[in-house]
View (cartoon, rainbow, N blue to C red):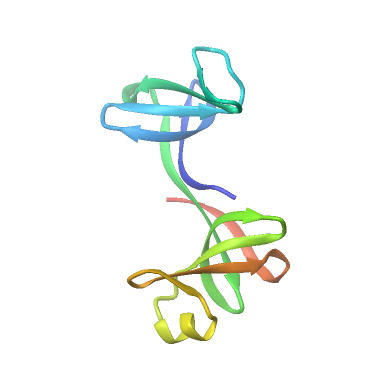
Length: 120
């Protein structure tokens, strides 16, 4: 499940983190100017002008008939954030109040439908 920036550089897509005039690109394997920051996480900083495309990718779904963003997954469960904007619905679904107006919970992956990735 992806939820974050991606950038296309030299014809390949990477997880990314824009920072002003630069973009940090991440990949699991070392090489090609990428430096290991921890095992399985390598970074290379490139000028933003070299980036072919920068987008925000978000995975969305429907759970129990309501719209959600998928934030992560773990052992058959999805960490979801309700996007319907109705507090009574969030309360009835027993979602956790993560912040003011932000409700999250764990949904069994088998109960989730309409799972799709959107580029914003």
